[in-house]
Amino acid sequence: MIDEYGVHSAGSSALAGNTKYSLRLEETISAHLGVQHTLLYPTGWAAGYGVIKGLVRPGDHVVMDGLAHACLQEGANSATGNVHLHGHLNVDSVRRHLRRIREKEPRAAILVVTESLFSMDSDTPDLKALQELSHEYGATLLVDVAHDLGAMGPTGTGFIGEQGMLGKIDLVMGSFSKTFASNGGFVACNSVAVKQYLKFYGCSATFSNALSPVQAATVTKAFEIVRSDKGQRLRATLMERIEQLRGALTAEGLQFMGDPSPIVPVRVGDEALARLVSRRLPALEVIANLVEYPAVAKGDARLRVQMMPTHTAEHVHTLAARLRKAIDAAQIEHVRHRAAVSEVAPAGAAVTAAVA
Image 1 (cartoon, rainbow, N blue to C red):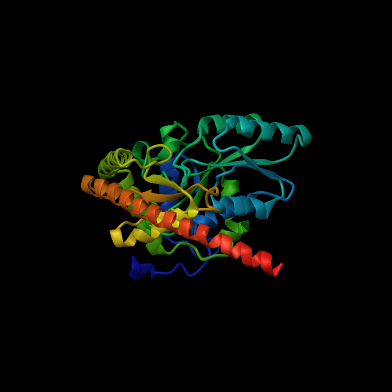
Image 2 (image 1 turned 45 degrees about the vertical axis):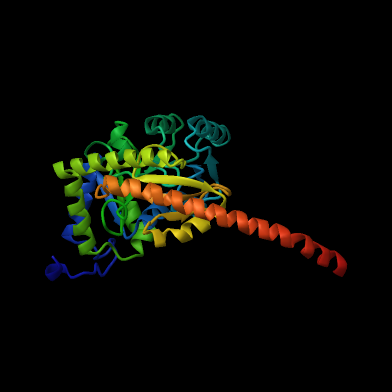
């Protein structure tokens, strides 16, 4: 494949950047999601930003979950000033926003935006309810499937498949950087007009090099594994390890968030404490991302653990014990630091008063 096409796409998908490997990947994704058309993007960020920036006009409205990914929020804020953040997973909140918009602007175009699995809280919306509500108010639904596609749901179709919504969501976008071992992203739909418009007028696709043939072939092979018996076994093992980790964390007195998924957010809370915990993890041979404001609310910092089916039961219990060890040690240091600061504060205050 490299001998045939090299390692670089050498152009935009709107020009000469496509190869038979990228076209085959588009067909693979369409078949996997039960839709007719797919457009590839160079990154997942480009897909999330580009689909909204490309389709939404300044006078249009975007009704978006308040915890939607930064690429979706950036795309919306770049496209229009009419961005309405609704309560997280709150269908009634979506309805209230749609009703208010329709009362004022009966003919306005509205895009409703959510994720099938939220990466910081590990929870999922009622996709069927959102799609029906969107159609009730003449709006279009966009669902970001970056975090569950391939790793969850029947035949790896994520929560769209789990909720019986394959082929029924207006617009689906996703990323290859989670389950599919590559950079890149996509937008899938049942409208050839939408695909062609985004291809030629969507900035993040039109004015960027396309996926390389190596990336396209890699993702296509990953989809083959996802859809195979091996993929089914891997997902079953993954869910087993996820449940084991949640049990092990509970046994260690640690608090995790959300529903069972490959993302296991372990809540720490205080940002200063969370940073002290994070510093200890490398020495304990633990890899977990520290997530704090502005990615999550202030005072709600967490460690974002990501599970793989290749983790063993021993890994799971060792991880929980080491997280407990890191948090306990960090709490002692945190208390000492706060006590030291409180001892210094009165002297500092006296100096300030004397100067004044």
